Length: 348
Image: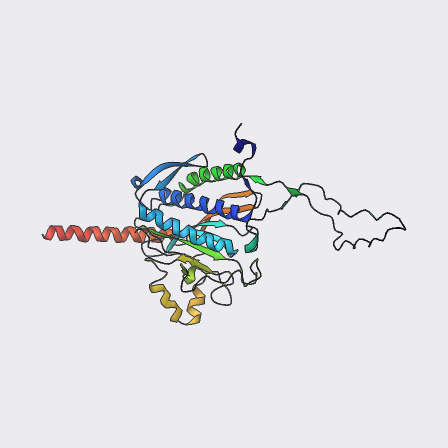
């Protein structure tokens, strides 16, 4: 028997939780791009992950963009700031059509200096145990001992579960990818030339970071950050304009690294980072009226919940309210362009 069989890998610290999520997210992005025909299917190769057949785009620039975007998500996850990560698909007119949401709101909040500390997960099914107390000192007049301090928390304690084997998590990932492939087939087809991006939604600003060094929901929008603010339609509504749990996005599209989204990684075409940023100079009321316009779309398709020890995630798909109209408009524009090209050929 091999040593790995005797001691299988376990999910026992926050660093491992984040690493597993980012590896899963990378595979999920490639899979969605394939299933939704964002790139030609001939540009994907067959691969296996979690003992399940998956697809991976083979274009170096696409792979590099996905790698950089997931690395930016990982950096924010390690800060404990992210509530949700989303893959947003846009129409050629930069209207959000589909949003694939990966909710990590129930990930543990761990200080930065304890990312490799073993996590203790309470066992909800085990009976409560009484608190342990030291036995009283013996009644010996020849010895002098100080009495034990009183127990400051006499409440019952909850037993903890052993570390979760990674094989348990990977089996749930396998089931999630199987469900993803079947459920995506029921969605309305997308128009050609769609773009995409990766976005993040932050925890509410009222929640402080695990290290106590600032608000966990502070948007990562400094000059050196790869993130830019999401367009108003993808910002959670709030009385403060940008929202209690604000959103950001990275650039990404079918043009190899361009695009737009929620909390987006910078670089690329699309609504965020270009014309829509002019909204910062507009009046407050029009901006606020657009907040949350594209969130919670016209149809929500639940996919699966994943729960393995400290790893708790929910995944669902949101179809935009105006998806049917956007598909019809894109088809109309395509026919107009084809008609114009035919007229030019006839004129020649």
